[in-house]
Image (cartoon, rainbow, N blue to C red; front, side, top):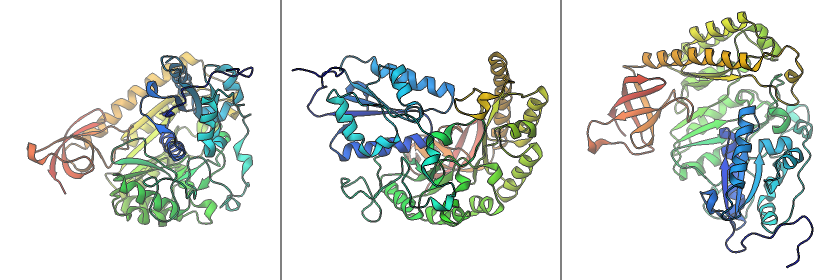
Length: 486
């Protein structure tokens, strides 16, 4: 066999198989499910373990430095599994963000594919397996692909991870009627992320996500309802609504309060017992949305509020809005509507110019806020962002010290908050035998609840929602005694 210059021998030709490794956030999980559906619909076989695959797709994260390093390490690990000579293909945010630059820096990857390759992902994989060298894309600001005015975007495009009307998907991969959902669940269990929207119109000075995820686009309500129905048929009981900015939902559909109307419809989907929202922008919160989350049956009173800091001066430099008093007032409104609501947030410490007074303001806010979960991140400059050009950066060792300081405080505070829940009755969705999520606990990040059953004959099944009383807490994790099952 004669090979063209620059090509490699084709991989095994029989029964081509693909494994998908997903890194990063729940939005990437949805994208991986979409990729899986397209691959399987085009005749490729999905396998769970990379060592058993002809090709390994690594769905990378490109958000912060640590996530990018994990993506590179995972790609190198996949490329180092030489026993079967699997092709290694980078997709996802880091691949989209860096394109040809990543391909040049990481020759161990057989291909680096961007979001525009997703609709034809099966053809791309087959080309790589045939020994072709695919050219990598040159990154571009994806915000330029859509009109500036949100109301002019409706119907313009389907961002990656969104469903499309594709009639050739096999049975069992989409609802029986209505718009077909391009999705094949790679995960299992009764909780699944659902992409509510894609992209972001905000211009936070530290964040590169809008440049590679694009402008904000809401998914139509009928498409979301069909996807929830399909998920319910596949064992999902809680729909975890994810996006880059959930509070903006509907602004490109001519109704900024569309989410308040949508939530009851989503909660009424047969088989879906709970709906949970993530990533609420504090500056865009409104009384009607607080009420909808707090009082709509089937919607859990859970508020994932992206505060990022509490010093007004730091927030202004971040190109965000708010202050410690503003945020505490918002939390008062939340708890007035739902006294036992779950509230989580992320904060960034060590932002350029952050003073000791700024840090003390953040610590004072966290001490007063009574949050159930707090993610603490150290600032790192991101290519192409405004903050990357700031000249008053803080020494990385000092940033690390501040992370340790605030994280230690956060651990103490969330443990205290969990202790406050001892004695409360909680509604727990069983996610694995003997363990579940109370309403204030989001999947993967907010701790779990261990269930104590009265006897072996009353052990709740995975997917059931049980009433339980909290008897103890360990950090953010609870232990609760089951009181009743459906």
